[in-house]
Amino acid sequence: MKKLLTYIVVAIVLAVVAFFSARYVSTLRNENRRLQNNQTALMNDVRYWRDEADRNYSKAQGITLKVSELEGLRARDAATIRELGVRLHNAQSLVRAAIVVRDTIELTRTDTIMVRDTIYDARYYEDKWTTIVSTPNEAVYSTNVPLTLVTATKQKRYLWGLFWGRVRGIEVVVRSDNPNAIIDSLQYVELQH
Image 1 (cartoon, rainbow, N blue to C red):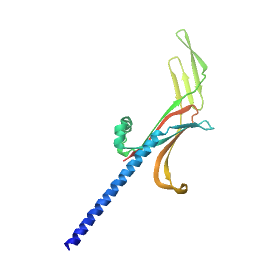
Image 2 (image 1 turned 45 degrees about the vertical axis):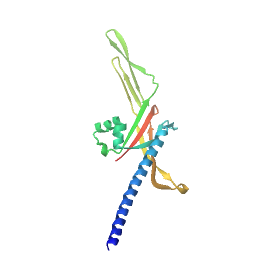
Image 3 (image 1 turned 120 degrees about the vertical axis):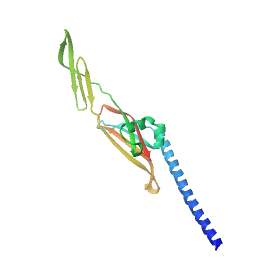
Image 4 (image 1 turned 180 degrees about the vertical axis):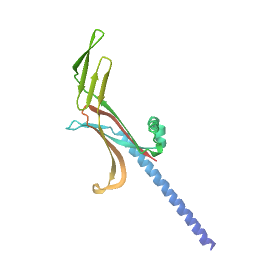
């Protein structure tokens, strides 16, 4: 009876050790896969293009960081998230896009202003995207840059082009409808908790 009880205890201990070992190996595989996807994303360049309707596009592959990695490697982004009143553990992702607006505009003289025997011109320009008002003391420039942002997961392909449950990476595409706005840089960080 004691031998049987010993065998049962040894079998239970081995089963528990095997279970926790399998969980640990699975965790290591997932971490390795995440780091491999991050390296691939960081090695890829951001793609820029323009379509027939004069809209600018930018496409980049996202990286996945743990909250502790975000605090260590991108402290400025972590501080920005906190300034917005969001706890880091509640944040899902972070997107940064830098936009440059370049346009050549001819201002027409709309008015003449005389200040203490000096003549100044007031100038004004307005179109669908840009408004400029220039007076002797100040110039006001405003532009409208509507952005459309889409994130998508890239899944691993298997036989015959079928998709399976494993996510290979995350892509983000940003579109600017303003033809004068150029998307200068694009970053996407997915936070893993």
